[in-house]
Image (tube, rainbow, N blue to C red; front, side, top):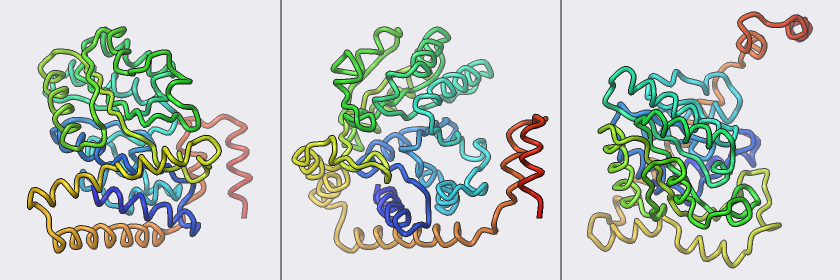
Length: 312
């Protein structure tokens, strides 16, 4: 959780310094991400949205790779099969269908693993979400759909974009099991995801988890939440943020002390600083890749644009 928090904090700084592009902040969602990943088997697939851009850190992906992705460098892409982490999905909800399809493939091949998709509350209002959930339930695929209900779909509150108060109630309509948990408690997330993944792998079909959190930070670095969020509500949310709560819990249990906390923070900061330096040291990419990796047979207009752009 400290590694994720540090990565997120530094990414905001790097954006302000012009070292990465527009960045989707996940401050306060570390318990959800870490709890879920640690509940999965290594052979399980993960389908992240832009809010989980750093999830690869928890499966030994170099920080430089993720920073390169935010810099728009092709080295930010890696083969999903290496760590069973799909490419980061920027279109809202699109990867829900991808996860359902992957889970169907796992079932057809008889693999004892599942696919987990992270998405926000806003994604539950998209057509791709409906299609993915319907397909997954109809085919009884081994999938876990993990909804991060942080109360805001960019600037739209959950109450204004859904007719149900509890998003987990949508699971009933698709014919799948659903559970609602505290997304700020990493152990609650771990237990819920572990149980759901176990049922999915055992042939009990897809599972839906609504993890209730609160977005205490802007949607992204291009967002101004002061225009639509109550500052008092944000302050209250920050007082209940997951990392501080869990650290206090571990201190009281005698698991953590000042020395271990300092060491973890120093290691996380060193990882982030080394990652951005490595990403910035990458050679400039060949601009031809923009044109040659979209179509197997580029259309005439695209070929003309490519030839014009490549002229000395």
